[in-house]
Structures are given as C-alpha cells and as structure tokens.
View 1 (cartoon, rainbow, N blue to C red):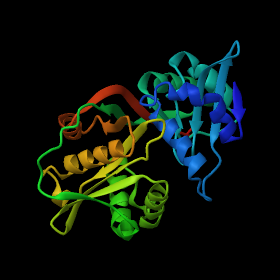
View 2 (view 1 turned 90 degrees about the horizontal axis):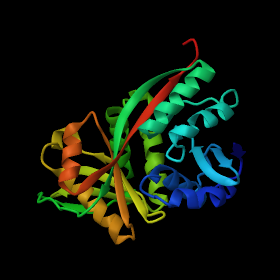
View 3 (view 1 turned 30 degrees about the vertical axis):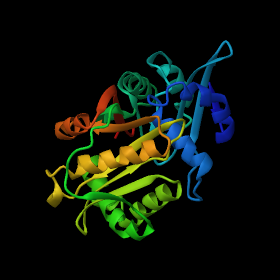
Amino acid sequence: MTRHDDLAEFWALTGEFFNTDPVFHTIPIAAVDRRLNHADPDDLPPLLVSVTEDGVLVAAALRTPPWPLTLSGVAPEWAETVADALAGEVELTGVNGPRESVEAFVVAWAARTGCGAREHMALRLHELGDLVVPDVPGAARVATSDDLPLLSRWRTRFGVEATEQAPEGISDERSRELVRISMTAGHGHLVWYLGDEPVAWAAASAPASGMSRIGPVYTPPEHRRHGYGAAVTAACASWARDNGAEHVVLYTDLANPTANSVYQRIGFRPVVDSAEFVFTPAGG
C-alpha cells in the first residue's frame, strides 16, 4: 500500500479507477474535485492511500478532513490491507462507504488499534431515473450570497437535526463558511418560496465526472408535510441536469422512512446501502 502526499498525483493514479462508476464513487469524486478545483486556504491535508497488486490498482481510499475516511474504493477483501497500513500511523475519527466494506474495515481497525466503534448512520445511495416533478404551491429560486445568513442558520439546524451534532459543534459562522465554499465551487443552492416566504432549501454539487449529488435538503419544522422538500429537491435535480449532470444522486437516512418514500416518488431509485461508523479511543 502507498501513502500519497500530492492530491493531483493521487488522482492521476486513481481517477480512472473511481470514474468507472461515478455513482458508486460519488463521495471521493466530489471531494477530489472540490479540493483540486476550488481549494480553500483552511483545508487540512488529505489522507490518500492506494493499493496495487502485480502493478494493477485494486483499492484506493481517501479522507478530506473534517470528513471520515471514505471506502467506496476499498472492496471488503482489501479492508485488512488498508487497516494494516494505517494502524499506528494515523488516527481516524470514523469511516463511511458501502456497508460491506465499512463493516470489514471497522472489524480490522478495532482489532489493530483497540478502538471502539459505533454505527452513526445507516444510509442508502439513490440515483435519479425519470424525474417526477411534484405539484406543490410555490417556486424555486437559485440562492445568491444575499441568502447566506438564512442558509447558514438552516445549515446549522440541519447539522444538529440530521447528523446529531451538538448545537455547539457547528456554529452559524462555520455553517456560513461551508455554504460560501459550496457556492464558490459552483454548486447550486435552491430555495423554495411560497409567495415571498422561503420554506425549504436544497443544494446540488456542480457536476464532476458527469455526477451531481444533492444534499443537504432542509425544511424548517413549521413548513413540513406540505411537499416543499420534495419540490426543492426536484428543482435541484433539474438544475443539475441542466448544468450537465448525467447522474444525479442523493443519500437518505434509513432511519427516516418518510424521506426515503418521498425521494422515490420523485424518481430516485436505490443503488447501494452504506454506513457511517464513528471510532472511540482505545480504553475509552
């Protein structure tokens, strides 16, 4: 296994490997695209690893802090190899990716480091087929920098609600920076308006390797159960396709059956089940 220090060199080696299936590898493709083309001065160095056998690339993984190590490029049979190489060299806060790969890595990592692990989220990756635009009152508008105060508040609430982050764990200031970086990278942020009132928000990444991923999607509690989330998601999907995306994808939380059914009604179809695990210190 090889550790890489240069992201461009890593992508020159692994880009074709990931781009063979831009839906399955949505997370690494989007992460590398953002780092290579819209780097931010506050970005921390990535963790980049590749595995070759007989001169052929067989696995690759990366972490772009603060996000976990992502394993779509590590089939279960290579999880121990990656864990062997990283154990004792780096500390990992967590891991995400296809469930089989993640579970294999978690077992290997715990055995080598003594760390504990708990499942943080059970996810399902979906790809859009034929878009079904829901009939919902209101209209979508592409957000601008003038919307940053609103979207930063909504991004904070999304983080607390959807990912169980403590309120002090993500501030409006940090949320504002995340949305600003996303807008600067050319991602589409759409707000659904009912008259003059904003009632829902969704974002779609700028297409990379023909793929765009939708998220976050957020509707304030007082505006839920009216279809605004589905409507703004459909508007985001249309934006992505209008901007060149061949594949439009999103993740759903399997703990939220309502959201899963809503997205399927507008045309999203399951691709693969994924998981995110969080590691706890050895002896903790």
